[in-house]
Length: 155
Image (cartoon, rainbow, N blue to C red; front, side):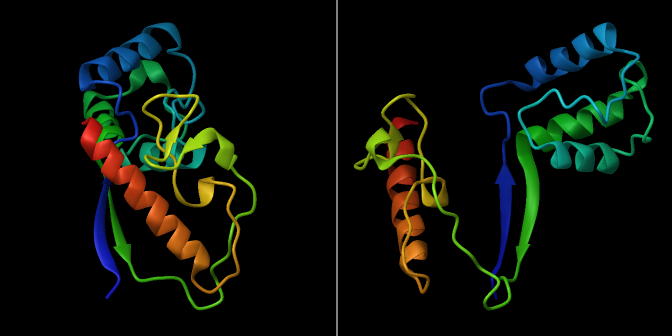
């Protein structure tokens, strides 16, 4: 039925305590700035705005006034955001992204970057194009599996 649950840690290299300190720092040093306009984490701006909304933070709220509850909610979302996958796209809605990271920059046995240790790359982030009809899916699945297996061995 194309249904699954997905959990993402958007800040895997930071502890909850480090995130809490980032909030404190911003509260003290940027208290007059609006929370919505100051995305201090490595996530898309639209997702930051969505998290601010879900945390119940008013549109014009300043960093100095963020509640502990809102801060806790955002930290929980950053470290374990939960998403429901329900269904798939309508036929002919899918498309392939052209371009991406050069294949010369990747170790094909592990899908690890040759330039950044611990960075594994797979799917359409790579500069691989194929005829629509499953070839791109196969490439994404295969590179994803290789990267996943290599990450599991390094964990």
